[in-house]
Image (cartoon, rainbow, N blue to C red; front, top):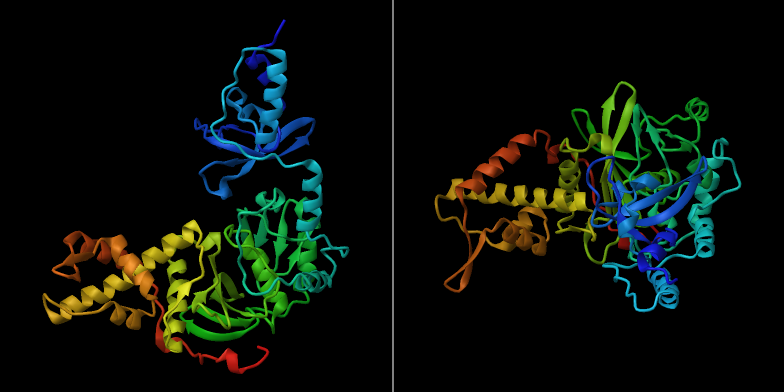
Length: 444
């Protein structure tokens, strides 16, 4: 007796690439999700899922009971294979087409890529010299040119979080994304980091052993800014490779849109710290190329999760533009920006431009005069970013053959409320820094 499509679909095994509604965080929401990987834990299957149209930091392992298999959407190859089987066994029955499809990944390919992506090393991670050995091997993986590339060809392994937790100082933090730490660290419940040199170890005992030898109490570079308890250190990626590479590994846990390369020589790193009696604790950082043909003033930027929503992100951005002012250039961040990065930059651009325009209006009466180029010169924000921000705010109007800026009471009041929250600002008087012309310095 011919089987129906429903009966056949119930027998189809859930594989990587399938899509179906999945219960999110034990709530009543069942958004569409893709199965990235499958494993067995105590004899029960678990599924690593990515919720479609949601940020990857929400990706997680779920049990079988969280899957809605009745609305299963097969991967392209599996679907065509199933169609063939169903057409042989049930004539006249037409299966429904899945709304969205994705290609299943073969297990052999996944295993090969796992070996490549894990950057497995023979040295034990808790060995006293393991950090140097690991980083020497990383430095051999030079790709050169940029710290970013197109993320559209990511494999299954790099789409999955591989580090469960990290301990950084007094903070226990759950990572958001994949970072290519040595494979040994993916098997421990917590990775312990030295908060001053960022060396990684796999146990608290190893970290304490490291502390007895680590002499750093601040990032290994020149302190170029200090006001109250906030300091910025400039780190040369060539002179301080060990620290720079460990900083990149840490940052990759919270940045998905960037892909980590290991040639840090062409980059400078500006680390923001908070000082107390124990030392200078890392809050966030940004990196920039020593020579940028596109005049990018930021390559990667990150505020660590424990310091987010406290105004530090805007402080990092403000500092990057302060350096551009010292260089006499306009700058822009390297694209693409993360979702949080774009929000921070849009907010910073809006507040900085409105601050100039509102102060100009107060100084010059009702009809002040200023050009886009004037705004760029005062802020060091690139012209296209100024224009896009004014358009985003709805301030540019075309009137009698020319563009004019118009303010509303709501815009002005909203700006004042936003600025009242920015209690910490960069003071250029406290910046002691001389720009270098890297083009004339030969080999960096």
